[in-house]
Every structure is written in C-alpha cells, then in structure tokens.
Image (cartoon, rainbow, N blue to C red):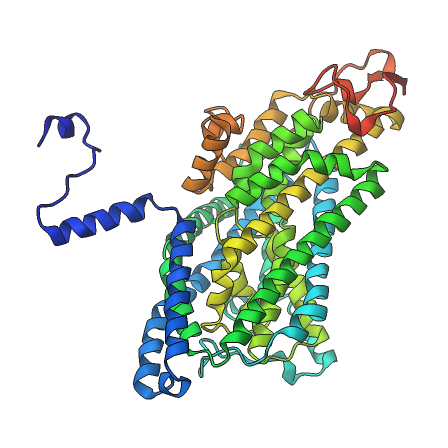
Length: 562
C-alpha cells in the first residue's frame, strides 16, 4: 500500500492493470460523479434515439412479429418491475408522512392562529390549482390527445373501470370510499382517499410530545424513515427503468407523430396552467387579502423562482426564498421561517396542476372514458396527494402511480413518457410552489401588521410577537426543527446546490444550530412582549430590517395609537 493510501484510507483506488476491469472502474467513477438528472436525460436521449431508428426503419408489421415483440417485452420487464417496486412503498410512505406531519402541526400550540390561517391559504390555493388542471385538461388536453397511443397489447395492470356504474353510482362510490370499513383492505385495493383521511385522523388523535412520546408515533416515524430510504433506493434506478420502458414504447408505437404531438400538447397545457395560476390566482388572492399591488412583491420573488427552476427542489431553494422574504420584501423572520418552511412541506400547487393533467392524458391515450364523477375523484385525490407529497426528488412520480390506481387508469409502458418529461415539468411545478409559498408569507405578514394597528389588545400582543421578531427561544427552536426536518430528507445534490448558491454549509444556510434535531414541533405560548403605553411601532421599521421602509406598507404611520 502506498504512503498516500496509508495516510488517507478513503483515497481513490488505483485502476486495475486488466483493461476490462479498468474500463468498468472508469464507468463506475463517471456514474458516481454524474447527477441523477444528467443520467435521466442521457437515458431518455438514448431511448428516444434508438426507438426512433427502429420505428422509422423497420416496418410496424415486422416489429409486431412474435420474436421482435417478445424481445421488446423482455426489455420492458425491468421497467415494469420498477413500477411495482414503487407501488410497494407508496402507501407506507403516504401513511407515515401524513400522520407525523399532522402530529407535528398539531403540537404548534403557541401559534395556533398562524397555523390555521397558513394552512387555510395553502388548501385554498391547492384546490384552485387542481381546478385549473382539470379545466385545462377538459378543454385542451382531452380533445386533442389521440386515444390509441398505447402500443402495449396487454396492460401492466388490469383494473375494474368505474365506467360500468352510472353517474349516481360513481358519486356514491367516491363518498363511500372516504370512510373505509377496513383500512387493510383499503390499502390493498388502492383506496388512496380513504387511506389519507384515515391517517390524517390518526395523526390528529395521537397524543404525542417530546416529554411523553407516543409509541404509535415512534413506530410511524421509523416506518417513514425506512420508506424514505426505500424510495431513494428505488429512484436511483429511474434512468435505467426509463430506458427499459421508453425505448419499447417509441419503437413499437403505431402512430409516432401522434405521440409526439400529444406529448407537446401535454407540456404546453401544463405550462399554460402554471402561468394562469402564477399570473392570475396568486396576484388576485394577494390583492383581495392585502389591497396592495402584487406586482412589486412578485418582482422581488424572481431570484427565488429562478433558483427553484435551476434546483428543481423547494428544499434547496428555501434559504434563498427566506432571504428574499426577509431582506427584500421585509417580512419578519418569525413569519418567513414558519410560513415558508411549512409551505415547502405541504404547499404543492404545481403538483396539484400536474397530477390531473398526467392522469387524464394517460387515461385518454388508453382510450378510457373520462366522465364527471371520475374527474371529481381525480381532483380530490390530486389535492390531497399533492399536500402529502414527500419532500424528496421524484416523489411526485411515486404518488402518480398510486393516483392512477385509485382512479382506475392502467399503468403501461406509456407511463415512461411522463417520466421522460418529468425533468421539465418538475421544474415548472417547483417554481409555482416556491412563488406560492412567498405570496403566502406576504399575505400572512400583511394580516398581522394590520392587527398591530387596529386589533384588540390580545391580537396586538400576538401580532407583536410574530411581526417585531420578539419571539422566545422555544419559537426559534421549533422553527429550526421545521427547517431541520427538510434538511434531514434532503438529497445530496440539493445540499450541494445550497452550498454552491450560498457559499455556506446546509446547516448555516438554514440558520440551524448543531443541536437542532428533526423532531416534531413543540411550540409553547411565547410570552407577550411589553408594549409601552399600548403603542406599537410600524412593522416596516421592526424585525429583520430596522429603520428600513417597507414598500408593502407605505402610508402606514410611524407610530399609531391602538
């Protein structure tokens, strides 16, 4: 062993003298140093290129011959196994993640009003996003997507169609499934709506605290950790699974031009939906709640939105989002840290737009009939599932598999088309999520700022704590825990993105102390600050940016009588 190797046991092993072994060592090194996004793009490029060559050069009747068809089915086998592996872990992941999230939110006792208002806003925008996704799918996507794109003769999953029931029967089945009589059977049959409601209720009923931990919570926390590890391990194989699914799809599809046109329509429809939500829904809500011009605020959010597009991760963007909120938009640290951190976990408006479009695209491509009752189901499932999406890369694909099962859309090789364009769709959706979080922080800040001027004595005390930054150590500690939970589930490439963007370690970028652990929140009532002669200062001159004018609150006096 060389002296360098003795000094550094983690030093890179030398290449073998055998040229074959040395070649595979080099390949292994390149793969280890290549990001997952690059691997996926490379896999998609190879699959599309090879599939186009076969599709254009070989007559379709020859491709469908017994020997050739068997060859393509064998290639797609690995991809189908990968899809089944996703389906194995999706329900444990959703069950545990939804339950512990509800427990964590329930324990924020000192800011209950803040939690209710923030969650209410996030639920409202998510419902609007799902509605936009359904509306554009019904008016643009479904009429323009061909209904015979799937090249597979046998579906990977055969499911019973809801279309055999009339409209009343379908609506009855939707609401009947909300309260499953047997949770085990509901999990086995893919009743996602019933499972989500059950585990949200379970989280609300669990009595848990740091001083008195609940055994059920600890079990679900361990299950959540295991599910995260399992999903991360499965996602590693995404580039290879995409090739195994996408190549046979393109090589054997009968109408290649129709497939390309339909995919372009899907991407453009998603982009239109995101533009509508970002340029109509968000500004309208901001104006309704604040009576302020939303354009200056949104313009200030551009750096965070561009960072979201480049990183494709709300977790990696969070330090930039918080910095823009506090330093540019003059939102207090207390409000920004809580609202933005909670939004990075539960506010997935972009995903709520994308889920219905992807499901309806695949249903239409398979020739499935999509009626009103089925659309209602998709909207409900998309809303709840997007809020329960795990904070990890490609988590949306995991949930999409379960949503398709829930609404009885067969999963075939055509699913690979959705995976192939996910790298672009995911970035557009992340931009929407980050902008929505920022707008929520601005609206919440404006509400509590107005309470300082016209609220009751108790409201003024509570608003003073949140706006002026006079929060006690327990509030700061638990805000750190909420962000620390994001760090604990962050992918390595996201951590590198944070360090590259900020020049700081992940811990420093999030403002976390070394002792902070990603546990549940335990926020006690913070002591009310002393208010001299019941007079409060203009929030534009308090908190994170003293003596600086806040453009959101121009016209508010320096000091006002309460």
